[in-house]
Length: 119
Image 1: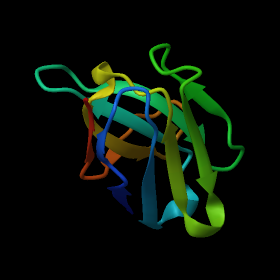
Image 2: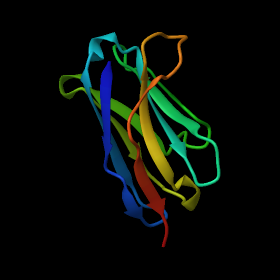
Image 3: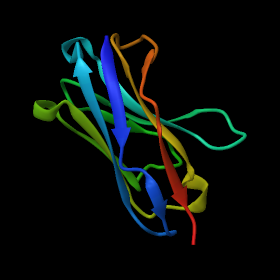
């Protein structure tokens, strides 16, 4: 099992930047990919982006492509979500999650961190 702890959320003005961190502990060697999801009030949880643990390949949702960047530091077992040009519609609770297999589901989740974009 892998334990995940997100941090870095907060309040930021539109157009601003924020960096979220997701620290993993436990059986991280069994992780295929780590992803970020978000859930806004009254909406379903949506995929933001993901990075593979070994190769570092990334993929993003169209809504954040070009504004958000996912990176990893394997030595620290930490994945980052750099968010630039933030918009009010980016306001949500952001979660990191892991999966073991390429075609598996994300079944290991952190507790989430709140991001609020508002003037």
